[in-house]
Length: 93
Image (cartoon, rainbow, N blue to C red; front, side):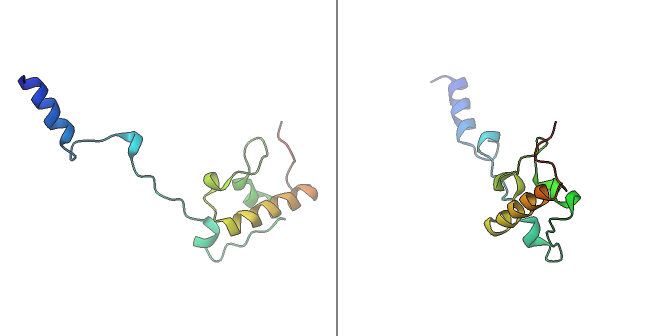
């Protein structure tokens, strides 16, 4: 075997130098409502709820907000209530 092939084989097996961004560990998002016990979600506070809706006015999913299942349900309920009392729009232009 040539020196070049042996070198490549050694480099491939060396885990210290291997960095593949495709397989990096992704940190789990922490629920913003669980982490801050003083934060209470209020459907009358539109500025607080804007963090949880997209630029088109859709409710963001859990993977985007990082909320736990319990708090994602409260977020959804609060956004829907805020839409009905016209604090938040149903859609954005």
